[in-house]
Length: 396
Image (tube, rainbow, N blue to C red; front, top):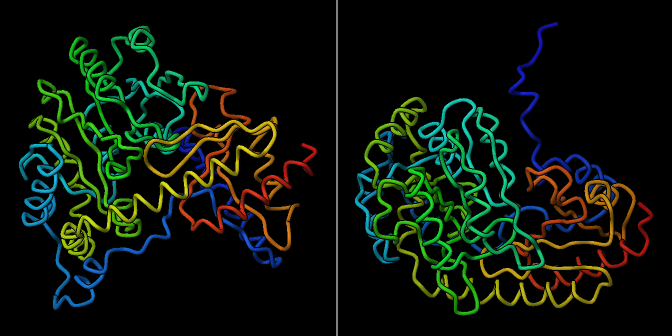
């Protein structure tokens, strides 16, 4: 029998999605599953984006340009300018989601066996993209006790070798909700310039910052033009996860030209989704103000309720819409599966994402879960009540 590849065997399962079969089975048995495991907002997509597709009069759904339509990229450049990020349309490649932007980035800056340093916990699919590219993720550990702040820069310095090609951050962070300060970005900028490597920033949650804090992009940092690469997406910003439109942004022309070759291999990003994404750029500021207010309320309620549970420790998110919770258990994978298979309260249970999959270091995150507070407050409150009862019953 032919064998699958080593690369395929090494490809990690998503901690966000691997429990789906158990959730589906629970639903077939009549349980209601409250999903805290995935960042699928229940916020409505801006009507202007929906109408752009609904009212479109295209007669042929043609390929777009490989790098995305000129009109969309020009409008993206204007959007970035409003956020004090000054780039041209030629600095932007439109991609099929932020995922493809990251895959193009890894393909453009790394060779097989190279290394990328990533503060952990990090977005679990970084492990998958690295495995697909034959790249080694080198973790630098951040801790819940200081709310997952940037580790000391000396810890990064210790890990840099001749194989190191980049430092990758998510800002604000998934799964922690941590927002890097301007000073922290400057420290990272200094070290990547010193060692002549790249700084890649996943900035898809740029709009979601709380408590008066402001996002500081790596492309706002002067002198970082050759080193900085942004990965971005419409998925969370406009609650358009299914559109699968993202972009790679950099002022490094050699990276743009290299990434373009990867983009040519997949021909073009989807046409109708670009139309929706272009229209979404006209979304009024009030939409974002209302969304931020809603997420702050959800965050506050979630933390308040979780803090009532004995033995639970929570990181306090400053952005995005996730938090890491440390539970009084030994194995969150087993606990998460048990919740779906063997537990219910009044016909309901909850689905969480075990946090070990958000680490590259063995043994970390085993007693942690990621919670996405993308549901309305009553559902969140009910979910925490179920979680509290479950922890009292769990014998794992």
